[in-house]
Structure formats: C-alpha cells, structure tokens
Image (cartoon, rainbow, N blue to C red; front, side, top):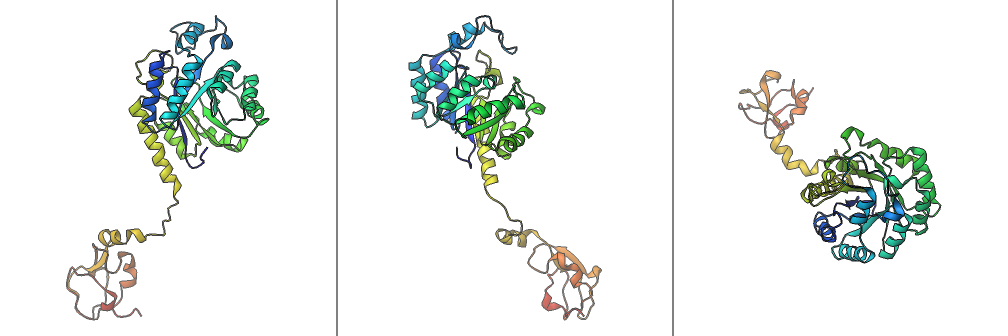
Length: 336
C-alpha cells in the first residue's frame, strides 16, 4: 500500500440487490470517482448462517438466509466482475463471511482481503486468510481491544501486511460516534497502518481521517439511495463519492508539503502591494524632529515598513517632505 496515498475503497456491498448488471454498473460509476478499489460482499448462505438467524435491526426486509441466496453470485460472475474492475483500473475486493467464501475468492484472484467487523472473532477464518499471505484490512466495528488483539495476533502468525480500521457498527453512524481518536490508539498499540471504515452519511469523517494519516478509507457506495437493501440508504451516491475522493486527495496535497513561514520570498510582490509604509501625515519642514503626529501608515509597502515606526520617531529630517509622500531613510538624520 502506498504510504503517501490513502487507499480509497468504494464499498458496494450488496446494494446491487442480486442484480449482476447493477454490480457491473457500480464498478463503472465508482471507477469514475477516482477510488482505488471497489468492494463487494461474498455471502455463501449455507456456509455462513442458520436459516433462523435474525436480520439486523436496520433491515427487516426478508429472512437472512433467503436474502443471501437471492443476492449471491456464481463464481463465474465473480470472476467476470473482477475482470471488469481490472479493465477500468480499480482493484476488485470482496469481504468473505465464511471460509467457503475465502476459498471462492481465492479462485477469483483476490489481491487483498477486507475482514468485516462481524468476522473479527472468527479466528478460524482469519487464520485461513492469513495463510494466503495477502494484505489484510481488518475492521473493528463491534469488537473490544482484546478481540482486536486476538485477530491481529492471528494474522501476525502469518505476516505483517495488516491495516487496522477504526469502525463503528452503527447504521448510520453519528458524528460523535466515529471515534477518530481510536486511529491513533491503534497505531500506537499495533505499530501498523490504520484507517477508517466509515458508516456516517456524509463525506466529512473520511476527509478528517485522511488528515489524521489514514492509510485506507472505506465508504459505502450505491448507485442510488433509493435502491432496496440493508445499506443503500446509508451509502454515498456517485457525485457524493467523487466529492469525497477529491477532498481526500486535496488533503494529501496539503499534508505532503511542509510550509516554512519564514520563507516569504514568494510573497515579495504581494507584500509591496498590501503592506503599509510610513508616510508624511502633513508637510514636514526640514530640521523637524519627528513625532507621532507627523507620521501615518499607508500602502504601498515599498518604503520604510510601518513596523519600524519606533526607529523613525525622534529622528530629524534632512529636507522638506511633502504631505502624503513615502519616507525614506535617506531623508532622515542618523539616530543619536
């Protein structure tokens, strides 16, 4: 992962609602926003859930088993979707929710794995993912420190290419629950790259995370918030995602250069235009000892800087100085 560039993931998830055409179109739309990867979710119903498992509180549309079966793709479709991502220059990703899904995605040719928050404690699956040797992004939305510790240690048994993502499993997540502070705690605790998997409804948390040095940011994405399913209403549409990507890239530019406030060379012309010089507030006869009543501060900044007022007061002028004219050091006697 490029340490100087935040890895941006458009999380389509299952907002395609089982339509392979919508899944393809999501790649088309996401690729135009400038994201680095487009991510889905690979659910193999029988390997993942019992038939009577409850739906999440934010989506009661249909039984979980039926939903996963209806919205799943064949391996041929996954391979085709991955190929389409490659054609458009974005990385294909999909979160597995079972060891069977990991095995399927290995056949598809996944480059890196994103472990969703609900699978952090599924250490057997994490061990299988670790054995692939591929980079891993580990979400943390509903896990305690001890659970994240166990997940990181399981993966570290195989390699160190791990990015830990702060996440809050609320849909939507309110601003006060984002937990940007946790990113710094994760970085210190694990000495690994960190990032954000964001569930807010706006673009601001990702931009803030980029400012704090996020190595990766994941954001839910949909073709339309009006699409059916569990995530569409809490996702960004294409124009919003483009604004987020542009914002993060702008932050990267801001953070990439250390500005030296002592180097004002580029402002030399501007300083002459906007800063103030000392000028004669009224006619000043030769021999006058200057006091405050004789002096004013006006543009341009091409004469004696107004900042040097105290150096000028008390000095005698060599010749007459007309009102409203710039003072110069040559017009003044040396200070005593």
